[in-house]
Amino acid sequence: MNTKGSLFRGLFSNAVFVLILISIVPMFVIGYHLMDVNSRVLKNEISQKQQTVASRLAAAVRFNITHNTQYFSVFVDLHTDFGGHNFINAADLKYLRRSNPSVLYLAALNTEGKLLLSSGKRAESVNWPQEIKSVLQACVKEQKPYYLGGVYPSKDGLFMLMAFPIRQHLNDRRVSGVLVAETGLAELGRTLLQVYPMDMNAVIATQEGQVISYNGAPGGLAAEPQPEMTDRVLEIKKLLGSSSSKEIKLSSGEKILVAEADLPISGWRVYVDQPADVTVQLLKESTFHSLWDVTVIVLMMLLFVGVVSYWVIKPITRPLERLRRAAVKQRENGDYVVRPEDLDIPNNEIGELAQAFVDMSGALHTRRQELIGAQTELAQMNQALEKRVEERTHELKAATRELVKSERLAAIGQMASIISHEIRNPLAVISNATRLIKMLVRTPDAKLLKQFGIIEAEIKQANSIISEVLGYARTRDLILSTIDLNSYLREILLSYPFIPGITLKDELDPESVRIKVDAEEIKQAIRNIVSNAVEAMNGGGTLTVGTKVGRRVVCIYIADTGPGISEEVRHKMFAPFFTTKARGTGLGLAVVGKAIGRHKGKLFIQSEVGKGTCFQIYLKIYKKPGDTSYGEAS
Image (cartoon, rainbow, N blue to C red; front, top):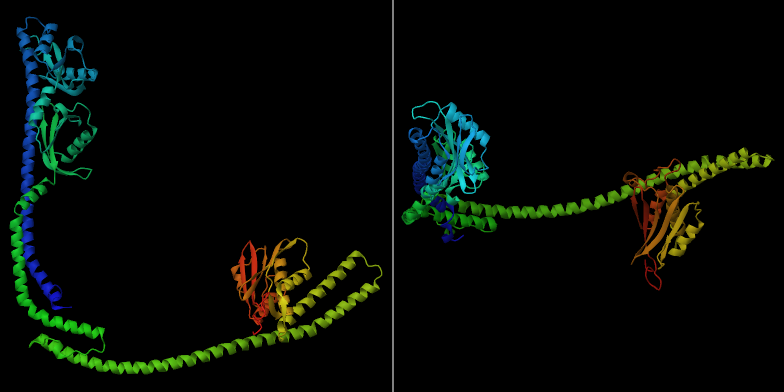
């Protein structure tokens, strides 16, 4: 790597990075601390501002409600001694409604709650039975100066239910009746519109969470129900607890700063809130105003660190960089030898390190040449030994296979000779004796004839087994002859004694080829496969015999619809004397394998349990139709 590039990596860059950290970290720590302090100060200021706004809104609501209550209280008090009659009459109610447009409905009740007279149309949204019960409790039994009921909607907006006790004289303690008024809150809404802040959310709600007014409401009042805002108010109330202001986190994940003010006169509450990240935004805005000053300070600091680092560290990193480049060349090129002129060797510890590296490079080169020579000789010796071992191993395996095969065939041949000598002669005697007895018995009955048949069948089966064993054990030279494959296969199938229930399907290729084989040996192999297939189908099924002609080989396939062969049996079925039948020598398929092997052919089996088995024999084509030379030289 060049020297220019080394300025930005290695010791130099690490040292610069450390110096920058030493310079910047304290600044950031102090700045973070100052921002944290400013953040807390801003939060306190915002909370105080929110409490001020909440108190101002509460004062506006309190003034409006107090004004209405004083209006009715003064009227009732003045009417007590100066009304000119004992109780409020219809003219008084009309006067009250005419002098105060916010009054929607007036009613005078006796102390039992019975309606005496009224003015205006009563709103249908009021739960009058419940409200009258509360009115009598507050004004008659508890003798409170007034009663403030619930807030209800009407076509003109929201209104509040108010009630005031009526007495005959000013100082009387006994209550003569109750004045009930439905008073509209439109004036309160107009007042709140002038008081609501523009940069905060404000809500006025009852103890139960009913929203009466909020910042941005048309006319200043919540004329329609606000279920989402009600849920938010109830959650804020729960999270605030006994505090009047603090930062809370809503269930939606939103963090807000909220302040609260109570209205004891009505039981309402005022909530004022802002997003909690407003302090961060204010700090960002204040920081961006001084961004240029911060940028200049940081640039000056980085320039100072760069100059000092270059002056102090570069004399150390320059020789180390040259030493590194020399080491890279040494690693990439084993024949490279570092020379003293390739390195900047100062008169210090780094110079001593560079000189030691030069000496080490020369010694490594010498050792490398010696090692390469030794490795070359060793590789040649190993190659010669491996070749000799491979040749001897191949010869040993071939000899072992031939020896095992010869010993096996010799043992089988010896056993076959014993069987032929010791069993066939007694079988011949038994067969002759059976024929003699049949001749001597003039009128044998059916049972006796059946027994004679069983004896002859068993003698035939025994002779067949002996012939099969002798056939596998005998080894003779192949008697090759050229045959037409299709005619040869049809002749074998015509001579085979198929039992009823077996359907033969012919799929011989129209292009018949000639093969050069030992006709008797291949015929025995094919008959053994056909016999196994017929026995596997258990007296019923389809036997398919066909051929497929390729370029140099022909495939003879024999398929049945029997139960198929399991994977475990397929691995053992060509072993001599292995059988799954109740009777048999287990040499049928062994003879097949031996015959195909002697003709240098290939034998494959495709089988699926429950669907059948297909034997495929591949033999070399000796001659095709019209071909006068193919296969003659082999």
